[in-house]
Length: 184
Image (cartoon, rainbow, N blue to C red; front, top):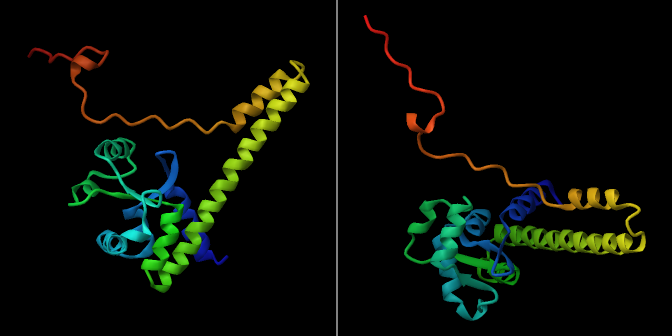
């Protein structure tokens, strides 16, 4: 894999989301990777509806859009389009290569498919590791409980960073009393 393919695969990995119990990529992320306008990507899909059944691509509900906005996955500027945003499953992304026919689309598609495969491998490896750990814990009873607990903590995903507060604070919100002016 070339360095540019590797870079595209890493960008794609960061943009894969879990929605409706499926790993998906959003239309505007795919359009950016393919180097086309989101509108052009949607038009290519709309011209070929038989290639995109519901398990390949689906339109996001208003509630899903709000959830993504609240998680800062998408900005509010992506919500003003005439049509809803689309989510493409792994099969839908593969199908896009047959409707977007540029050389870049082919290269990006290969990188995205590799990202989906890598993600699937990481998830299965982690599940297998958790199963083995559970089996070992049963076998060795409580003798190594501390070790097993430490391993579980290492396998857990890192906690999300705290969200920054938005807005302003009034004096009523602070613990210190306001300073008074000295009389002259």
